[in-house]
Image (cartoon, rainbow, N blue to C red; front, side, top):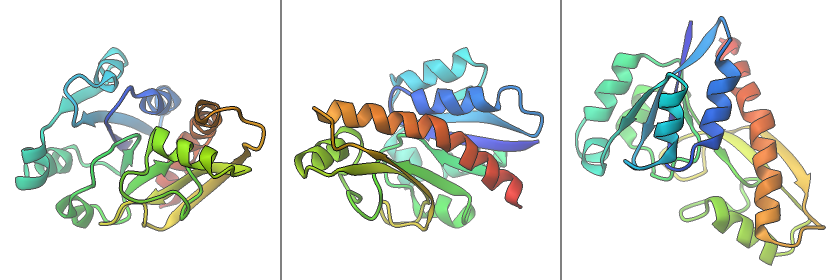
Length: 189
């Protein structure tokens, strides 16, 4: 059985979608959800779906190997960042090379980098009157949004009335494609 660990910072709709996608899968499962926010809704969603939900603080993530040891003990085949806002530490990246992926709500390299996440991306896309936006699923390295792209999907946003309209279209792309790409990566080996 392949093991997936998810890191998330917010409400966890992507994490919930991924957990549900693998719920009845005989070959892979989400075993843990980690969050840097104690009150993040993702922890409640995970618990409700029978997945181990863990909270950690900045010190245990960056200044010690506490999180690294817990992740190593869980022995994941893939670590998935689904709305996780902290930069991933080098000790985890080195321990799991090409085993950590992220979904970014834009077509990288456009609208990537520090501070470019969620509503900030959609606002920039809207203000720049882009006609196309999308998602990029990529490997995580030591720099924000600079890991090699694995998959991109685009959607027309020329008719949107607000950044929130863009967000809705991007969420639909994430829900449709992210679990499938995870599955493909797990079985590629």
